[in-house]
Length: 392
Image (cartoon, rainbow, N blue to C red; front, side):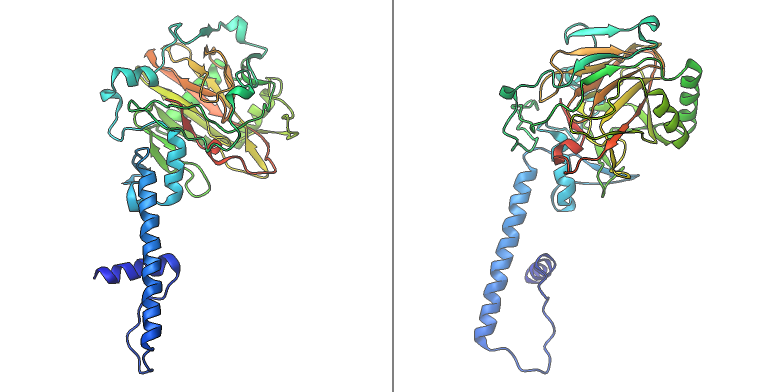
């Protein structure tokens, strides 16, 4: 039976024909039969060695459960295909994810890393008032503010780092990047009126916001497939598509800091039609992470997302700032926590700005995220930059 399993597996792996029942034709010579056995044993040995190497690689960072719709299956060992395994390793970004973690059983150290609070210990806090925010946009973090040659590797890093026993990253290796825009983080004036904000909250709640510990895997094969976060995300979301609203946001973002052309010559093409509405209740948060390049949609009509707009639909809560953080290759040099007034937004570059949704201490926070599109680059982006990557 074991020989049958090995042969069947190798037949699928290497395209080898499986044994057939004897026919009336003459049997092969002993020399040819012996050669066939030797070839088979050699191919089987290669296959088993590949499986062993893949298993060893998967043990470097524990990988969490993969959720697709309501079906959950293990993503360890032979049940996980190689592409999903690679995506999950890139998303982990060298940090250990506890598959059993839920917000209620986090250690104090873990919660301190995941659920940030704007208490002055992580840089300045900008709690803007209506008079200062409505109207013009203003720059917060210049493009490439934290980058210099001493902090950037030779471009050969795959974006993953090793991890200490406590789950913290031990190195800050990252792919060599270029400054693509004058500002890596900035804030906008009013994009929505209070009435428009309220209408969007009502619309999203009517569609039933989805609560769960997951992020979207992304990519052409997986799209909205879910990956558990190990209690790094604690909120409720709903993705809404609206072409008419996208046209409205394209018009209102016209004078709000978006560069018409990136440093590599690629031109702005408008706001995408996908809008992610998220509700954070008391105690909820989104741990530090880098947005995947192209978040909010895939290459579409030759355009790809380059920035994320975080529009605040409410402001009558305590905590819940958007934290922009240095380290791990982030463009941010000095930590800053932003609290836009209702209807205003913070904007940041995808792939290279470490940020988090701070813990809500009182009340309920609603935000909307959407994505400005630019002409797609001629060459594919480095793979790790196309996934969300954890920074804690």
